[in-house]
Length: 95
Image (cartoon, rainbow, N blue to C red):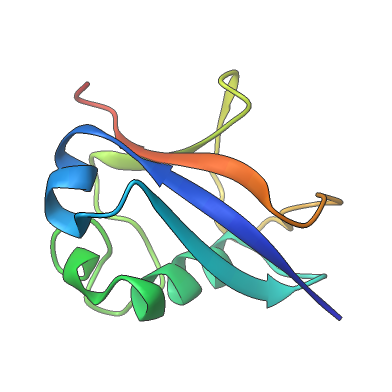
């Protein structure tokens, strides 16, 4: 099975992607690295600017925020049991 997650953008990430929300579909057992790879497919303008050219990691100043309280440090961890259409925020830590 799979689920859709929504990455919200703001600041420089929005300026590059020109999308406020980017929906990606990943497997139920997906890692954050899988989310980044799916994001690179859904928003190719982010590759080389926000997402590394290998499409498997975020560049140094960018991160994924969960619930306003947690930032993802290890992209190889599972995204966990989230509901379909759960929102996360993709942002620059320079904000």
